[in-house]
Length: 392
Image 1 (tube, rainbow, N blue to C red):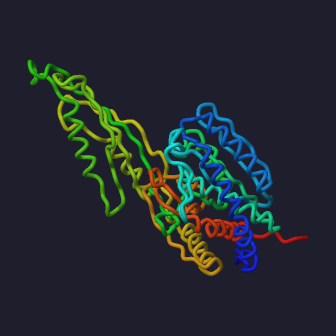
Image 2: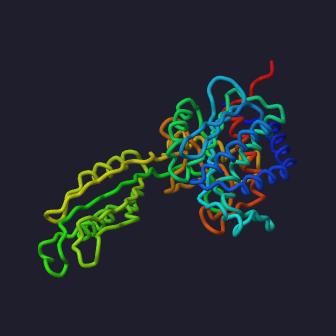
């Protein structure tokens, strides 16, 4: 890879600085268009806006991928050449429609708040303006850039997953515009994989007062299994098993026939997730006359800190320090993202979006003075990994 020329990236960074107020205008627009994951009408409206905005700011082409149950997705393409680089950004949020009334878009000094501003509409807008800066400064890349905006990341990518995986298979590198970690804005070079399971226990019902000895409680069995499963958590390896929701029984005076637990599994490696998966499906009852039924599976593989991912981070760190004059850190996280879906197929660097705090929380916000540098960092990474096309 050719080293990013200092003068080229400085011109791009200057253009981003010049267009800072315009970037802020688009940020306000997208935050004030609420996009709760469960509201298809609102999501579809925003998908159309993203398609039109991409063509307006960046050029290239855009396509709306229509989905029946969930929100539509948007696939955008800019430039041409051998190979492609993929940029990922989701535009759904966890905030129900109407949240804006209680948590409006607001700028207070260096703090910009509003539903979804940090996770992850700020990063999405930064991505658009990074591409706009490349286009406006006359830079053509040697690889095609594909930008995929998905509408269902917050609910586990039920409809976007096959599209994202297909694009990843065709990509040389993937950049995910999820927010950075902590107020340091650290990039995410490792994400745990996720497993989602459901354990149903069947016992024998009976009257709790008249015939308590004739019943076998499913709740009792489930409680024992929960203790066993939680005992499998190993913080030294990063493997966690957590029962987050339970239900069971019919009445207080009935020995419960049924009980159910919903289980969350996290692991740093595919090997570890597969080990836990096998263990869960081989669980045996701890009490006689009870039955266990396990369903579910691995939802997404880990984003592992491979040599390629390490190299991508070191490149980003060097660009940040030597050309943009700021320090960049890396961290690992237990949370999942679109990056987990691409990691098995292409080298993926995550957390390139906004710097701030409060994802999914009432204090959600981003730091205004970090937007330009993050925008320029993405542009620098695109120049480095896609290369500048020489003019003929």
